[in-house]
Length: 171
Image (cartoon, rainbow, N blue to C red; front, side, top):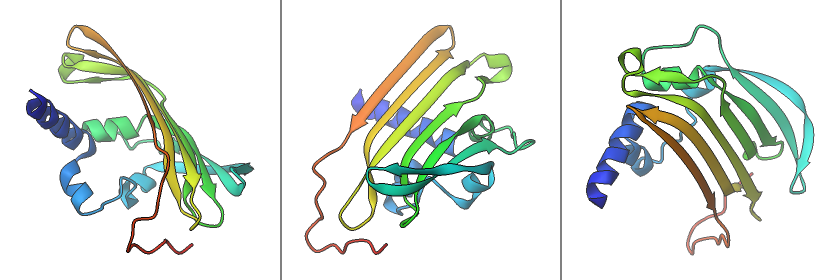
């Protein structure tokens, strides 16, 4: 049952992102690709200190007229948020993303709809200057066929250590 659930999850992630998640991990592909970056308009809001580091706060909104037919295109055309980017390293110190409006999946929404989606990411600076995700939260409210679904997730990471034999990142 767990294997089947994992296969369904992988298939869903592939449909959503347009690529095989297992292959992306093996090839160390980033979720943030040039295509993803080009989907949004950016506006620098201010400078702010996050965990002792100077960051640039940037808002992003979807570019008008970029809605396509795939689930990924429709999702990205409705995402907006705010980034806190470390001035020295360019790493993401914080991220807040939300769905600006819901959308239906399948012909006339028969398969379901996503009503609300929010994600927050808080990173922690390491001694070598890189930022690693410390806390991620996500909340999704959706309908699948005739059932309402609410999903909330919180993931925390701590006690990061540099693996023996690995080189620290250069800022």
